[in-house]
Image 1 (cartoon, rainbow, N blue to C red):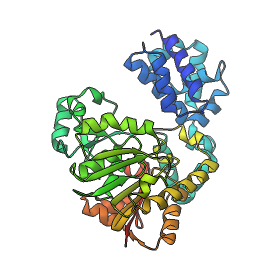
Image 2 (spheres, rainbow, N blue to C red):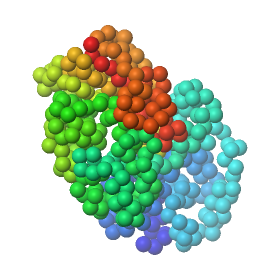
Image 3 (cartoon, rainbow, N blue to C red):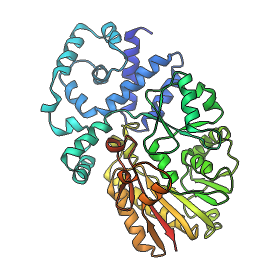
Image 4 (cartoon, rainbow, N blue to C red):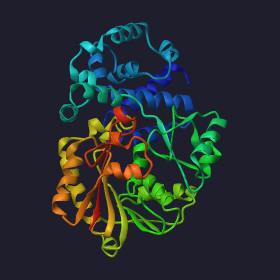
Length: 419
C-alpha cells in the first residue's frame, strides 16, 4: 500500500478509537475486517500506532497544538510505529520539520500530567499508594508494552519440551520467574500457526493470571467453580490443575464470552469443564450448588486498570463513578460466591485492578461481614505451589502484582477458607 494511503488509514482508525465509546481492541478488529486487503505488517503498524497514541494521548495532544492539518493526522505522525520510510514517503516537508521539532522537546521539562499520561483521578491514588519515585516507575511501565506470556497445559506437555519446540520454530521463550507453568516470549509471533498451539500444548495467559488460578490449589476429583469465567483462561488452568478430573463449572453472565471458551476448551483436551451462562450472581443454578463446592475463584468484574499496557484506552474510558458502581457489584458477587463453599472450602477473590478500593477495601469488608471465613496468607499458598520468590509478590496476606515490579499485569487476590 502507498505510504500516503496507509497514513490516511491510520488517521481514520485513530479517529474511530479516540471516540472512546467502545473497547479499542474491538474497534481495531472491526476496522481490519473492513480492510481485509491489509497485510500483516500494515495491520501491525496501524494497531501499534493507535495504541501508542492512546498511551501518550495527553502528551501528543499537547505537542499537536503546534502543528497543522487534522488532529488525528498530527497524532498519528507523532505516534507512528510503521518505520521512517512511510513518514518520508507520506509526510510533507513541513510536517517532517514540525515532527522533528516536536521530538526534540525535552519531555522532562513538561508538566507531570503530560509525562505520566494518566487522568488525575487515577494518578493521585497511585502516587499516594506508591510514593513519588515508584509511581514514576509504574507510569513508565504502563506506557510501555507487555510481553507475551504462555501457560503450558500440564495435561498435554511439559514446560521444557514446549520451550524447546518453540526454539525449533525460531521463537525464543524464557521460563517465567514465578509461575511454574509459564513461558515468556518477546514480540508477537504467529503462535496460532504452530502445531503445539493447535493441539493445545500452550495457551496465551499473563503470568499473573496463572498465579491467580494457582492460589485455588484445585485438586483431582474436586468440585470447583470459576465464578466469572469470561473467555476461560483461568478456567483452563484450573482444569489442568485438576488433571481433567472432578467437575469444574465456568459461570459467566455473557454467553458471548463463554462461546469464546469453546474452541480453547476443545484444544485443551479437558472434559471436566461445564460452561454455564447465568443471569446474575443470585441465579437459581448457583443456589442449587450452595454448600457443595470445594474451591471458588472469583475473578470479579473490575476497572481493568492493571492491564493498561495491553488496553491503554481503559484509563480514558473509566471514571470514579464507574469504579464506585463496580465496587457494589464486586461486593455482591463475592458474597454470593461465598455461599457455594462447603466447610473447609477455599475462596479466592481477584481483580486486575491497581486501586485499593477495588482490592483491599472489598476484601476487608468481606472479612468483617463473614466471620465464618478465615483469611489464608497468599505467601504460604504460593510457596506450597512452588512459586519462586513468593515473598516478593505479596502485601500482607494478599497477592499484589505490579507491572513495574513483576513484569506482569497488575493483579490482586485475597484468599479465605470456610470454617
